[in-house]
Length: 335
Ligand SMILES: [Zn+2]
Image (cartoon, rainbow, N blue to C red; front, top):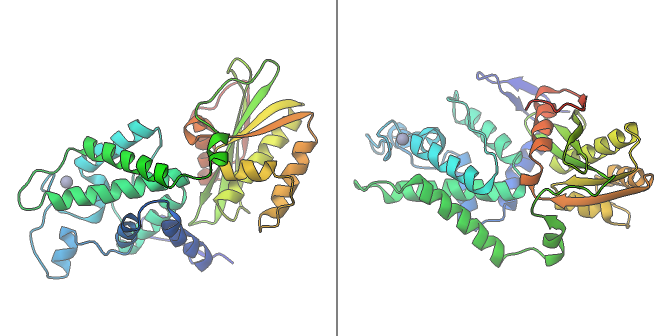
């Protein structure tokens, strides 16, 4: 049973220890060097010696932001300082990923921690690595700039963070089989075929998910779209597979028999293509979706990069956050 209460900033907080535990596990599951994970964990646990903390603990007074001379809080150093804002902007430009910014204030660290864990859990695997690395690099740059030196240019910090993630990925690359299945660019379906792009979103603090679907034809024209609220999703992968199910229901409603189903979860795509019975906790839903796929004349499941799945992602977030279920035909929703 999940019990919810509102914090002073209006966010919903969960007391479900299982969800909270999962959110913390995400830190240790992130594919980055250990020191980067530990830094993120310290950030979440209020263990970084920012100016405000040093003052509160009577260790040192007057430690101000090394980039803009304002009061140095965790929120300021990593997100709100114009220097950090630039770094996040550059990272989004370089990678095509979207990172939302926290609210301007929190009532206490616990409130901030709730936001942080929620935000982190809703990022995709590769985005988590990027976010953790940028936060760590911002911290190193801040430490290097002590003793009166000017802090490093935020753009070069972002570039280095992206390069470090790429380098790490290369050295610790996944088996070639999974990588080669992930398409780099959105591509048009063949003549007479449609393409259904799907995405799932999951809100840890509320224990619910959402799904987005975008349908395009062989010219790239928008044909239909849907966003859906999944009150029963139990984790991000659950939301992803429910989004695929929603896409298949839409295909059925549209009487469509030849289409590509694209998800940005390589794991979900691989499981849907696996002929062996899925015995995991999400097994029943995977099996149900696999049966639905077999009912179509031609339904090809593919994995794409998240950057090729942008609109479906937006719709999934919409369904999840606003708890809405909607379908559009012919005219694309504004998001
Ligand atoms: Zn600043």
